[in-house]
Amino acid sequence: MRYIPNQSMLFRTLLIFVFLLTGCTMVGPDYVRPPVKVSQNWMESYDQRVKQEQSENRNWWQVFNDPILNGLIEKAYLNNLSIKVAGVRVLEARAQLGIATGELYPQTQQAFGTLQYYRLSDRSPQAAFQQAATHQSASSSKYWQSEIGLTASWEIDFWGKFRRAIESADASLAATIADYDSALVSLTGDVASSYILIRTLEKRLDIARQNAETQKENLKIVEVRLKYGTTSELDLEQAKTSLNNTLASIPALETRLQQAKNSLNVLLGLPPGHLEDILQGTSEIPVSPPHVVVGIPTDLLRQRPDVRSAEYQAAAQCAQIGAVKADLYPAFSLSGTFGFLSSDVGTFKLTDMFRWKSRTLQAGPSFQWNIFNYGRITNNVRVQDARFEQLLITYQNTVLKAQQEVEDSLIAFLRGQEQADFLAQAAEAARKSLNLAVRQYREGVKDFTTVLVAQQALLNEQDNLVTTLGNISTNLVGVYKALGGGWEIREGKDWLPSEIREEMTKRTNWGKLLAPAVYHPADFEKPKSLIRSPDW
Image 1: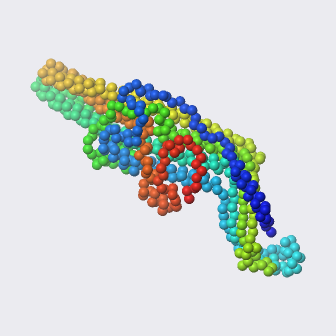
Image 2: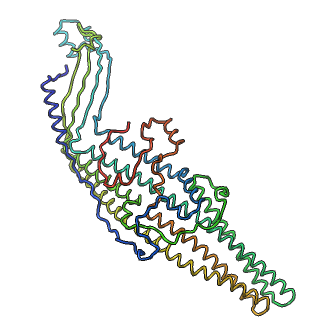
Image 3: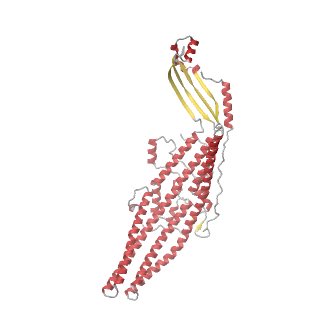
């Protein structure tokens, strides 16, 4: 027979429960952003080309004024597979947060029902006592019993174990979103760099082919002079050597060009193939502006997604310390079962189950305390704390590396401009030198070695100039990438394209999780527990 407490005891139990709930606390440390070493200004801030005003890098690739590049960025954002994977991970993190939030509510909520047939052994003590008490035959040891009801169990979050888990899952969601943003920063930078490399290789190929044509013309001059005996066969062989060396550089450049196009195809979510339809138009290298807006170093803490991700991961791990530390203390629970039970023993009937007197109730508080596991639990707390410290140091190191990347790209961008100025002058001088050398060779004033030297100098200087111009634009891309620009392209948009969301909806009930959600770094400026209703 089940014990049914009276209303007075139930009321006292409820008072105890309310007292426990209102007295809840949270063990473990609260996350505090660790100190980081950030410079006050960039090393090149004295340069007039460096603007330290508030940087706005939302669509930084537009500074190149290249419509084809703008289209490539948009196409990559819509179709890149790595971005889609990052988007699915955001949805996974949102679902994980829902799981953690659900643990804050009654953990067990079940409806049950049974219909069972019993036959007690005629030799069992229960059957003997029953026969003696009722003076009935052994047939009374056979009966049916039915039961239906609800049961629930709620471990009260007295020490904050579940709230810390929510806090950890919330910070993990923020880290996952930051990882998505970081993937966007890398994608936009990689697309721009690949496009610049393609245009640079195309220009280098043009230069090599133009020089090859010039060398073919010079070879004809040598052949004519050899025919009339005004030069030696040595000049002929030297002219062939120079021409073939130039021609030999063309397949190598074509190989690199096709490889760069294949790489761009993958970034666009396409199989390797021709890009003529996408790249049609001007083949000029995107020209960078002479200046760059970089803001101040402390902007990196807000702007760079990988810095935010490192901090959110540390915040998530900090909450894990409290979640594990709660196991050191007793766990308080409130459980109960309410239902109806009936049998056909004696004068009872199974159909009496739904009569009010057939009700059954079992409710009350309980606690559980792992008093002999302190070594295991304490060491688990130490493990979590050690992991937290590792992530704090990783965050500080990420901030330092972010500053290094900006400084490296910035100095390369600025000095590249100065290098390009000298190379442009050198290329022009080499062109004039070659024209003079050819004219003097025709007139018999200089030997062919002078022409060869001038030819090689012109090819080298033109190739170096084009390569440097490409590097300048690539280094500017590196500056914006190091500043963390480009992730804003996803604001107000879905994490996944519609076809993937539709496919996932067919497989699984995703509820509201597939709907676009607005997340901005300011939402997680100070990671903290966001107690919310689960997304069911």
